[in-house]
Length: 471
Figure: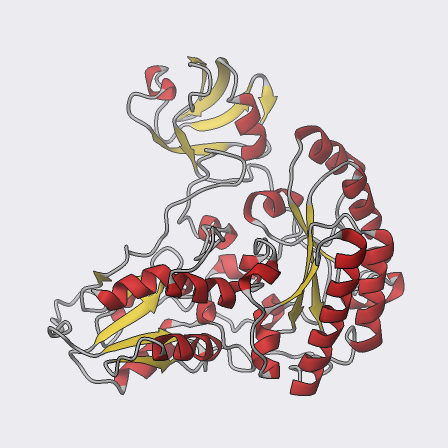
Protein backbone atom coordinates (compact mmCIF):
# COMPACT_ATOMS: atom_id res chain seq x y z
CA UNK A 1 0.00 0.00 0.00
CA UNK A 2 1.27 3.48 -0.86
CA UNK A 3 1.63 5.91 2.03
CA UNK A 4 3.22 9.21 2.95
CA UNK A 5 5.12 9.82 6.17
CA UNK A 6 4.26 12.95 8.15
CA UNK A 7 7.52 14.82 8.71
CA UNK A 8 6.08 17.59 10.86
CA UNK A 9 2.80 19.11 11.99
CA UNK A 10 2.41 22.87 12.14
CA UNK A 11 1.65 24.10 15.65
CA UNK A 12 -1.97 25.19 16.04
CA UNK A 13 -2.94 23.83 12.61
CA UNK A 14 -6.11 21.79 11.96
CA UNK A 15 -3.95 18.65 11.76
CA UNK A 16 -2.39 19.42 15.15
CA UNK A 17 -5.81 20.01 16.71
CA UNK A 18 -6.94 16.64 15.33
CA UNK A 19 -4.02 14.88 17.01
CA UNK A 20 -1.91 13.94 13.97
CA UNK A 21 1.72 13.33 14.92
CA UNK A 22 5.06 13.45 13.15
CA UNK A 23 5.93 9.92 12.09
CA UNK A 24 2.35 8.93 11.29
CA UNK A 25 1.93 7.20 7.93
CA UNK A 26 -0.89 8.70 5.90
CA UNK A 27 -2.51 5.79 4.02
CA UNK A 28 -5.94 6.96 2.92
CA UNK A 29 -7.77 10.21 2.56
CA UNK A 30 -11.54 10.32 2.04
CA UNK A 31 -11.41 6.50 1.81
CA UNK A 32 -9.04 6.45 -1.16
CA UNK A 33 -5.43 5.26 -1.23
CA UNK A 34 -3.10 8.16 -1.87
CA UNK A 35 -0.95 8.14 -4.99
CA UNK A 36 0.71 11.52 -4.76
CA UNK A 37 0.66 15.00 -3.29
CA UNK A 38 -1.61 16.22 -6.11
CA UNK A 39 -4.40 13.92 -4.95
CA UNK A 40 -3.66 14.89 -1.35
CA UNK A 41 -4.00 18.56 -2.20
CA UNK A 42 -7.39 18.06 -3.83
CA UNK A 43 -8.82 15.95 -1.02
CA UNK A 44 -7.35 18.09 1.76
CA UNK A 45 -9.08 21.19 0.40
CA UNK A 46 -12.43 20.11 1.82
CA UNK A 47 -13.79 21.62 5.11
CA UNK A 48 -13.89 18.11 6.61
CA UNK A 49 -11.07 15.71 5.80
CA UNK A 50 -11.14 12.04 6.83
CA UNK A 51 -7.69 10.48 7.16
CA UNK A 52 -6.61 6.91 7.85
CA UNK A 53 -3.19 6.69 9.49
CA UNK A 54 -0.77 3.98 10.50
CA UNK A 55 0.76 4.86 13.88
CA UNK A 56 3.37 2.35 15.02
CA UNK A 57 1.55 -0.48 13.26
CA UNK A 58 -1.93 0.44 14.49
CA UNK A 59 -4.68 1.94 12.34
CA UNK A 60 -5.93 5.36 13.45
CA UNK A 61 -8.89 7.20 11.90
CA UNK A 62 -8.87 11.00 12.16
CA UNK A 63 -11.37 13.63 11.07
CA UNK A 64 -9.87 17.08 10.51
CA UNK A 65 -12.18 20.09 10.39
CA UNK A 66 -10.91 23.38 9.07
CA UNK A 67 -11.94 26.70 7.63
CA UNK A 68 -12.25 27.45 3.93
CA UNK A 69 -8.82 27.67 2.32
CA UNK A 70 -7.05 26.79 5.56
CA UNK A 71 -4.13 24.38 5.01
CA UNK A 72 -4.12 21.08 6.83
CA UNK A 73 -0.72 21.84 8.35
CA UNK A 74 1.25 18.72 7.38
CA UNK A 75 4.72 18.38 5.87
CA UNK A 76 4.92 15.06 4.00
CA UNK A 77 8.08 13.19 3.09
CA UNK A 78 7.40 12.74 -0.61
CA UNK A 79 5.55 14.12 -3.58
CA UNK A 80 4.89 10.66 -5.02
CA UNK A 81 3.49 8.07 -2.62
CA UNK A 82 3.40 5.05 -4.92
CA UNK A 83 6.32 4.79 -7.34
CA UNK A 84 8.03 7.30 -9.55
CA UNK A 85 7.41 6.22 -13.14
CA UNK A 86 10.89 5.63 -14.50
CA UNK A 87 12.00 6.22 -18.07
CA UNK A 88 12.33 3.23 -20.41
CA UNK A 89 13.96 5.19 -23.23
CA UNK A 90 17.66 4.74 -23.91
CA UNK A 91 18.58 8.07 -25.47
CA UNK A 92 22.20 8.34 -26.56
CA UNK A 93 22.27 11.94 -25.35
CA UNK A 94 20.84 11.26 -21.88
CA UNK A 95 23.08 13.08 -19.40
CA UNK A 96 22.34 10.55 -16.65
CA UNK A 97 24.29 7.97 -18.64
CA UNK A 98 27.21 10.42 -18.63
CA UNK A 99 27.48 10.86 -14.87
CA UNK A 100 30.53 9.56 -13.02
CA UNK A 101 30.01 6.83 -10.47
CA UNK A 102 29.70 7.42 -6.74
CA UNK A 103 27.36 10.43 -6.74
CA UNK A 104 24.09 10.80 -4.82
CA UNK A 105 21.48 8.19 -5.74
CA UNK A 106 18.92 10.84 -6.65
CA UNK A 107 21.09 12.00 -9.56
CA UNK A 108 20.78 8.61 -11.27
CA UNK A 109 16.98 8.50 -11.09
CA UNK A 110 15.73 8.67 -14.68
CA UNK A 111 12.03 9.51 -14.49
CA UNK A 112 9.36 9.87 -17.15
CA UNK A 113 6.49 10.76 -14.83
CA UNK A 114 3.94 13.36 -15.86
CA UNK A 115 3.31 14.17 -12.19
CA UNK A 116 6.91 15.27 -11.71
CA UNK A 117 6.64 17.26 -14.91
CA UNK A 118 3.70 19.11 -13.41
CA UNK A 119 5.15 19.51 -9.92
CA UNK A 120 8.80 20.22 -10.72
CA UNK A 121 9.08 21.01 -14.41
CA UNK A 122 10.77 17.72 -15.32
CA UNK A 123 10.53 16.85 -19.01
CA UNK A 124 8.57 13.77 -20.06
CA UNK A 125 8.70 12.02 -23.43
CA UNK A 126 5.12 10.70 -23.00
CA UNK A 127 6.27 7.19 -24.03
CA UNK A 128 4.75 5.83 -20.80
CA UNK A 129 1.67 8.05 -20.87
CA UNK A 130 -1.75 6.34 -20.92
CA UNK A 131 -5.44 7.05 -21.45
CA UNK A 132 -5.90 7.04 -17.67
CA UNK A 133 -3.11 9.60 -17.34
CA UNK A 134 -4.74 11.83 -19.95
CA UNK A 135 -8.10 11.60 -18.18
CA UNK A 136 -6.51 12.63 -14.89
CA UNK A 137 -4.49 15.50 -16.37
CA UNK A 138 -7.55 16.90 -18.11
CA UNK A 139 -9.95 16.36 -15.20
CA UNK A 140 -7.63 17.86 -12.59
CA UNK A 141 -6.18 20.49 -14.97
CA UNK A 142 -2.56 19.51 -14.31
CA UNK A 143 -1.05 22.33 -16.28
CA UNK A 144 1.57 23.22 -17.42
CA UNK A 145 3.42 20.09 -18.47
CA UNK A 146 6.88 19.84 -20.06
CA UNK A 147 7.42 17.52 -23.02
CA UNK A 148 10.64 16.41 -24.72
CA UNK A 149 9.99 16.44 -28.46
CA UNK A 150 13.50 16.26 -30.02
CA UNK A 151 12.06 15.47 -33.47
CA UNK A 152 8.56 15.39 -34.97
CA UNK A 153 9.42 12.79 -37.62
CA UNK A 154 8.22 9.50 -36.05
CA UNK A 155 11.12 7.31 -37.15
CA UNK A 156 13.76 9.89 -36.23
CA UNK A 157 12.19 10.40 -32.81
CA UNK A 158 12.04 6.66 -32.17
CA UNK A 159 15.71 6.41 -33.11
CA UNK A 160 16.61 9.34 -30.83
CA UNK A 161 14.79 7.79 -27.89
CA UNK A 162 15.86 4.26 -28.86
CA UNK A 163 12.28 3.25 -28.13
CA UNK A 164 9.71 2.28 -30.78
CA UNK A 165 7.00 4.10 -28.81
CA UNK A 166 8.84 7.33 -29.55
CA UNK A 167 7.29 7.14 -33.02
CA UNK A 168 3.73 7.28 -31.71
CA UNK A 169 3.79 8.92 -28.27
CA UNK A 170 3.47 12.49 -29.57
CA UNK A 171 -0.20 11.67 -30.15
CA UNK A 172 -0.56 12.38 -26.43
CA UNK A 173 0.91 15.84 -26.99
CA UNK A 174 -1.81 16.50 -29.55
CA UNK A 175 -4.44 15.23 -27.11
CA UNK A 176 -3.14 17.42 -24.28
CA UNK A 177 -3.21 20.51 -26.47
CA UNK A 178 -6.71 19.63 -27.74
CA UNK A 179 -7.90 19.65 -24.12
CA UNK A 180 -6.39 23.05 -23.38
CA UNK A 181 -3.41 21.86 -21.31
CA UNK A 182 -0.48 24.27 -21.43
CA UNK A 183 2.62 22.46 -22.67
CA UNK A 184 6.21 23.64 -22.95
CA UNK A 185 8.37 21.66 -25.37
CA UNK A 186 12.07 20.97 -25.68
CA UNK A 187 14.42 19.87 -28.44
CA UNK A 188 17.89 18.68 -27.43
CA UNK A 189 19.96 19.14 -30.59
CA UNK A 190 22.52 16.42 -31.27
CA UNK A 191 25.00 17.57 -33.96
CA UNK A 192 24.84 15.47 -37.10
CA UNK A 193 21.67 13.74 -35.99
CA UNK A 194 18.71 16.06 -35.40
CA UNK A 195 20.19 19.42 -36.40
CA UNK A 196 20.25 20.94 -39.90
CA UNK A 197 17.46 19.63 -42.11
CA UNK A 198 15.96 17.52 -39.30
CA UNK A 199 15.72 20.55 -37.01
CA UNK A 200 14.05 22.53 -39.79
CA UNK A 201 11.56 19.67 -40.28
CA UNK A 202 10.92 19.54 -36.55
CA UNK A 203 10.15 23.25 -36.35
CA UNK A 204 7.95 22.92 -39.43
CA UNK A 205 6.24 19.96 -37.76
CA UNK A 206 5.56 22.06 -34.66
CA UNK A 207 4.04 24.78 -36.83
CA UNK A 208 1.82 22.25 -38.63
CA UNK A 209 0.87 19.91 -35.80
CA UNK A 210 1.45 21.63 -32.44
CA UNK A 211 1.12 25.40 -32.89
CA UNK A 212 -0.64 25.64 -29.50
CA UNK A 213 2.62 24.86 -27.68
CA UNK A 214 3.32 27.60 -25.16
CA UNK A 215 7.05 27.59 -25.89
CA UNK A 216 9.68 25.40 -27.51
CA UNK A 217 13.23 25.45 -26.13
CA UNK A 218 16.08 24.46 -28.44
CA UNK A 219 19.04 23.43 -26.30
CA UNK A 220 22.49 22.05 -27.16
CA UNK A 221 23.68 18.57 -26.34
CA UNK A 222 25.75 18.35 -23.16
CA UNK A 223 28.67 15.93 -23.43
CA UNK A 224 30.66 15.01 -20.34
CA UNK A 225 34.03 13.30 -20.27
CA UNK A 226 32.18 10.15 -19.18
CA UNK A 227 30.16 9.90 -22.40
CA UNK A 228 30.38 6.46 -24.04
CA UNK A 229 28.26 7.17 -27.13
CA UNK A 230 30.53 7.70 -30.13
CA UNK A 231 27.94 9.66 -32.13
CA UNK A 232 27.40 12.24 -29.41
CA UNK A 233 29.71 15.26 -29.59
CA UNK A 234 29.62 19.00 -28.80
CA UNK A 235 28.56 21.61 -31.35
CA UNK A 236 31.07 23.47 -33.46
CA UNK A 237 30.75 27.23 -33.71
CA UNK A 238 29.38 26.93 -37.24
CA UNK A 239 26.73 24.45 -36.06
CA UNK A 240 25.72 26.79 -33.24
CA UNK A 241 25.39 29.65 -35.72
CA UNK A 242 23.22 27.48 -37.98
CA UNK A 243 20.89 26.64 -35.09
CA UNK A 244 20.54 30.34 -34.19
CA UNK A 245 19.75 31.21 -37.79
CA UNK A 246 17.11 28.48 -38.00
CA UNK A 247 15.51 29.60 -34.73
CA UNK A 248 15.51 33.25 -35.81
CA UNK A 249 13.82 32.40 -39.13
CA UNK A 250 11.15 30.35 -37.42
CA UNK A 251 10.61 33.00 -34.76
CA UNK A 252 9.74 35.45 -37.54
CA UNK A 253 7.45 32.86 -39.10
CA UNK A 254 5.65 32.10 -35.84
CA UNK A 255 5.27 35.81 -35.08
CA UNK A 256 3.64 36.42 -38.44
CA UNK A 257 1.29 33.43 -38.11
CA UNK A 258 0.69 33.15 -34.34
CA UNK A 259 1.63 36.59 -33.05
CA UNK A 260 4.40 35.18 -30.82
CA UNK A 261 7.87 33.73 -31.25
CA UNK A 262 7.12 30.31 -29.70
CA UNK A 263 10.65 28.89 -30.28
CA UNK A 264 13.77 30.06 -28.43
CA UNK A 265 17.44 29.09 -28.46
CA UNK A 266 19.27 28.41 -25.21
CA UNK A 267 21.80 30.97 -23.99
CA UNK A 268 24.63 28.50 -24.61
CA UNK A 269 24.11 28.82 -28.35
CA UNK A 270 24.85 32.54 -28.26
CA UNK A 271 27.98 31.90 -26.22
CA UNK A 272 29.10 29.13 -28.58
CA UNK A 273 28.48 31.32 -31.61
CA UNK A 274 30.04 34.43 -30.04
CA UNK A 275 26.86 36.43 -30.58
CA UNK A 276 25.15 38.97 -28.35
CA UNK A 277 22.07 37.84 -26.47
CA UNK A 278 18.70 39.13 -27.69
CA UNK A 279 17.10 41.88 -25.60
CA UNK A 280 15.04 40.68 -22.66
CA UNK A 281 11.76 41.70 -24.29
CA UNK A 282 12.38 39.21 -27.11
CA UNK A 283 11.99 36.32 -24.67
CA UNK A 284 8.34 37.25 -24.06
CA UNK A 285 8.26 36.52 -20.34
CA UNK A 286 11.15 34.02 -20.07
CA UNK A 287 8.79 31.11 -19.43
CA UNK A 288 11.63 28.67 -20.09
CA UNK A 289 14.12 30.51 -17.88
CA UNK A 290 15.05 27.35 -16.00
CA UNK A 291 15.89 25.63 -19.29
CA UNK A 292 18.54 28.28 -19.97
CA UNK A 293 16.31 30.44 -22.17
CA UNK A 294 16.79 34.16 -21.48
CA UNK A 295 18.70 33.49 -18.28
CA UNK A 296 21.63 35.71 -19.24
CA UNK A 297 19.43 38.57 -20.42
CA UNK A 298 17.29 38.51 -17.29
CA UNK A 299 20.37 38.28 -15.05
CA UNK A 300 21.88 41.31 -16.76
CA UNK A 301 18.65 43.28 -16.38
CA UNK A 302 18.46 42.40 -12.68
CA UNK A 303 22.10 43.34 -12.17
CA UNK A 304 21.57 46.71 -13.84
CA UNK A 305 18.29 47.31 -12.02
CA UNK A 306 16.28 47.39 -15.23
CA UNK A 307 14.72 43.92 -15.01
CA UNK A 308 11.03 43.25 -15.31
CA UNK A 309 9.28 40.61 -13.24
CA UNK A 310 10.97 37.53 -14.69
CA UNK A 311 11.88 34.22 -13.07
CA UNK A 312 15.31 34.12 -11.51
CA UNK A 313 17.50 31.93 -9.38
CA UNK A 314 17.27 28.22 -8.70
CA UNK A 315 13.97 26.66 -7.79
CA UNK A 316 13.43 23.93 -5.21
CA UNK A 317 13.07 21.15 -7.71
CA UNK A 318 12.94 17.40 -8.15
CA UNK A 319 16.48 16.58 -7.04
CA UNK A 320 16.16 18.75 -3.95
CA UNK A 321 13.01 16.79 -3.07
CA UNK A 322 14.65 13.45 -3.92
CA UNK A 323 17.57 14.39 -1.67
CA UNK A 324 15.17 15.14 1.19
CA UNK A 325 15.89 18.87 1.12
CA UNK A 326 12.33 19.92 0.30
CA UNK A 327 9.35 18.32 2.06
CA UNK A 328 6.26 17.76 -0.05
CA UNK A 329 4.38 20.61 1.59
CA UNK A 330 1.56 21.32 -0.85
CA UNK A 331 0.90 25.02 -0.44
CA UNK A 332 -0.12 24.87 -4.09
CA UNK A 333 0.19 22.41 -6.90
CA UNK A 334 3.71 23.43 -7.93
CA UNK A 335 5.61 22.73 -4.75
CA UNK A 336 7.41 25.56 -3.02
CA UNK A 337 10.38 24.93 -0.73
CA UNK A 338 13.00 27.01 1.01
CA UNK A 339 16.39 27.27 -0.62
CA UNK A 340 18.80 24.73 0.72
CA UNK A 341 21.69 27.18 0.67
CA UNK A 342 22.44 29.78 3.37
CA UNK A 343 21.02 33.24 2.92
CA UNK A 344 22.80 35.83 0.85
CA UNK A 345 25.99 37.06 2.42
CA UNK A 346 26.16 34.23 4.95
CA UNK A 347 29.75 33.31 5.68
CA UNK A 348 30.11 29.57 5.92
CA UNK A 349 32.44 28.74 8.82
CA UNK A 350 35.62 26.81 8.22
CA UNK A 351 36.48 23.20 8.84
CA UNK A 352 35.76 19.99 7.00
CA UNK A 353 34.77 17.01 9.09
CA UNK A 354 34.93 16.95 12.86
CA UNK A 355 37.84 19.31 13.43
CA UNK A 356 37.75 22.83 14.81
CA UNK A 357 40.06 24.45 12.25
CA UNK A 358 39.84 28.24 12.16
CA UNK A 359 40.05 30.10 8.87
CA UNK A 360 40.46 33.82 8.58
CA UNK A 361 37.49 35.54 6.99
CA UNK A 362 37.79 38.39 4.49
CA UNK A 363 39.45 41.56 5.72
CA UNK A 364 37.63 44.91 5.60
CA UNK A 365 37.63 46.35 2.10
CA UNK A 366 39.04 43.12 0.67
CA UNK A 367 38.97 42.40 -3.07
CA UNK A 368 35.99 40.36 -4.21
CA UNK A 369 35.98 37.30 -6.45
CA UNK A 370 32.73 35.98 -7.96
CA UNK A 371 32.93 32.25 -8.67
CA UNK A 372 31.24 30.84 -11.75
CA UNK A 373 31.60 28.27 -14.50
CA UNK A 374 33.10 29.14 -17.86
CA UNK A 375 29.76 30.15 -19.41
CA UNK A 376 28.71 32.23 -16.41
CA UNK A 377 32.08 33.98 -16.37
CA UNK A 378 31.51 35.18 -19.92
CA UNK A 379 28.22 36.72 -18.85
CA UNK A 380 29.52 38.17 -15.58
CA UNK A 381 32.74 39.68 -16.93
CA UNK A 382 31.16 42.50 -18.98
CA UNK A 383 28.60 43.26 -16.25
CA UNK A 384 31.23 43.61 -13.56
CA UNK A 385 33.30 45.68 -15.97
CA UNK A 386 30.43 48.18 -16.11
CA UNK A 387 30.95 48.87 -12.39
CA UNK A 388 34.36 50.37 -13.05
CA UNK A 389 35.80 48.71 -9.95
CA UNK A 390 39.27 47.20 -9.93
CA UNK A 391 38.59 45.32 -6.67
CA UNK A 392 36.05 42.90 -8.20
CA UNK A 393 37.00 40.00 -10.45
CA UNK A 394 35.43 36.85 -11.83
CA UNK A 395 37.01 33.55 -10.79
CA UNK A 396 36.33 30.90 -13.42
CA UNK A 397 35.96 27.36 -12.11
CA UNK A 398 37.06 24.74 -14.61
CA UNK A 399 34.76 21.74 -14.52
CA UNK A 400 37.16 18.81 -14.35
CA UNK A 401 34.69 16.61 -12.52
CA UNK A 402 32.32 16.29 -15.49
CA UNK A 403 34.70 17.45 -18.19
CA UNK A 404 33.62 17.65 -21.82
CA UNK A 405 31.64 20.77 -22.67
CA UNK A 406 30.07 21.09 -19.20
CA UNK A 407 30.60 24.72 -18.22
CA UNK A 408 27.46 25.96 -16.44
CA UNK A 409 27.56 27.29 -12.87
CA UNK A 410 24.86 24.88 -11.70
CA UNK A 411 27.15 21.89 -12.31
CA UNK A 412 30.16 23.21 -10.42
CA UNK A 413 31.29 20.69 -7.80
CA UNK A 414 33.12 21.15 -4.54
CA UNK A 415 36.37 19.56 -5.69
CA UNK A 416 36.67 21.93 -8.65
CA UNK A 417 35.71 24.99 -6.59
CA UNK A 418 38.29 23.97 -3.99
CA UNK A 419 40.96 23.64 -6.68
CA UNK A 420 40.17 27.14 -7.95
CA UNK A 421 40.21 28.65 -4.44
CA UNK A 422 43.45 26.91 -3.48
CA UNK A 423 45.38 29.21 -5.76
CA UNK A 424 43.64 32.36 -4.52
CA UNK A 425 44.78 34.64 -1.69
CA UNK A 426 43.39 34.29 1.83
CA UNK A 427 41.49 37.30 3.15
CA UNK A 428 39.59 38.08 -0.08
CA UNK A 429 35.80 37.80 -0.32
CA UNK A 430 34.53 34.87 -2.38
CA UNK A 431 30.93 34.85 -3.62
CA UNK A 432 29.42 31.47 -4.55
CA UNK A 433 26.09 31.18 -6.45
CA UNK A 434 23.59 28.98 -4.62
CA UNK A 435 22.51 27.27 -7.85
CA UNK A 436 25.36 24.77 -7.46
CA UNK A 437 24.13 23.58 -4.04
CA UNK A 438 21.33 21.17 -3.14
CA UNK A 439 20.55 20.60 0.52
CA UNK A 440 23.69 22.61 1.32
CA UNK A 441 25.98 20.33 -0.69
CA UNK A 442 27.66 20.32 -4.08
CA UNK A 443 26.88 17.46 -6.47
CA UNK A 444 30.00 15.62 -5.33
CA UNK A 445 28.89 15.77 -1.68
CA UNK A 446 31.33 18.48 -0.57
CA UNK A 447 29.90 21.27 1.61
CA UNK A 448 30.98 24.92 1.47
CA UNK A 449 32.51 24.41 4.91
CA UNK A 450 34.98 22.00 3.32
CA UNK A 451 36.41 24.59 0.93
CA UNK A 452 39.90 26.02 1.52
CA UNK A 453 38.54 29.61 1.72
CA UNK A 454 35.39 30.93 3.43
CA UNK A 455 32.68 31.72 0.90
CA UNK A 456 29.50 33.75 0.89
CA UNK A 457 26.59 31.91 -0.72
CA UNK A 458 24.56 34.34 -2.79
CA UNK A 459 21.19 33.75 -4.52
CA UNK A 460 21.68 33.27 -8.24
CA UNK A 461 20.13 36.44 -9.57
CA UNK A 462 21.62 39.71 -10.73
CA UNK A 463 20.04 41.91 -8.06
CA UNK A 464 21.35 39.70 -5.24
CA UNK A 465 24.86 39.76 -6.69
CA UNK A 466 24.76 43.53 -7.04
CA UNK A 467 23.67 43.89 -3.42
CA UNK A 468 26.43 41.58 -2.27
CA UNK A 469 29.04 43.59 -4.18
CA UNK A 470 27.76 46.84 -2.69
CA UNK A 471 27.99 45.67 0.90
